[in-house]
Image (spheres, rainbow, N blue to C red):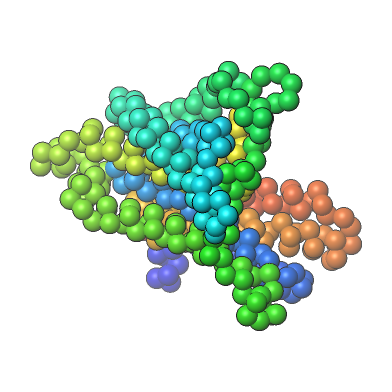
Amino acid sequence: MNMIKKLGLPRIIIILFFLSLWVTAGVLKLYLPDYLTDSMIRIGMNLILVLAMVPAIRSGIGLNFALPIGIICGILGGVLAIEFKVVGFEGTALVGLGGFLFALSIAVPLAVVFGWLYGILLNKIKGSEMLVSTYVGFSIVSLFCIAWIILPFTSDEMRWPIGKGLRTVVSLESTFGEFLNKLWAIDLGKVSSSFRGLIIPTALLIFIAFVCLIYLFFSKTRIGIAMKTVGDNPKFATAIGLNVNGYRILGTILSTVLGAVGMVVYAQSFGYLQLYQAPLMMAFPAVAAILIGGATAKKATITHVVIGTILFQGLMTISLPVASTFFLEVAEFDGGNMSEVFRMIVQNGIILYALAQGGGSND
């Protein structure tokens, strides 16, 4: 009963559903090592985007639905790496490192500037942050739909063959596509044939762990503790002399920067940059993941990030093949379309539950 009270019945149901899908996959004789590899990659490519919610929540601005601001900064870093043909360390195991670092070096300063401006805006509309942030995120994506057409990029890898503007999907193969996925990857199939297809993306997992440790260290500093104090009790923070507005801006900047870094990591894992409307809804899975992990609109930790990302991305990885196999072998009809419907039900059902929990707390 204590566990049910602590976790909440809906969250326990999601965990059991997650486990049951993997058991069902085994019963249906799906090759689990491939899906475990896919799950680790999906967790790695999404975790920093989920982590971006933590400084926003802890500084008191709530769930950052304007995550597309940081995501756009990350995309800008990626397209500039392609434009200037930055690769680095060609002919070595570190090929792509130069492009990856270049994209980060562009994305992070841009995210600081955009985050600062966005933080000033949030200080002017206190109490309506989550509502306004949604529209701000949508607006920045729409603005850059125009920018991708009029900005003077010249790379043939990105431009349409006829007309103006960049393509909707741009490959990162020539720069840093799958750089972290392949670097120091461990193929367990070489150890035992039972694990054939199970590959651990070592560098990807190390990088996300490194980013989490940096944020954890920051949260233990005086500035990090002060920022949390502002988020927990603004009146008390004002009484002891803390600059509430300043720390709210700091939290917004950190969230935007993590969104930019997360997008660069996401893109390298995916192998492509998706432009125009693609970033529009990317904040919602990140919000859902952290809330499923146990966070609320006022409380969030790295533990919530890790648990939520594993649950959410694990569900998304295994639900589609399980549904496809079930419809084809058990129900005896081609469930190609039905499996996609099932995946959307699972994904949007999780988001619906998570957002419904956003205003309350079970902790």
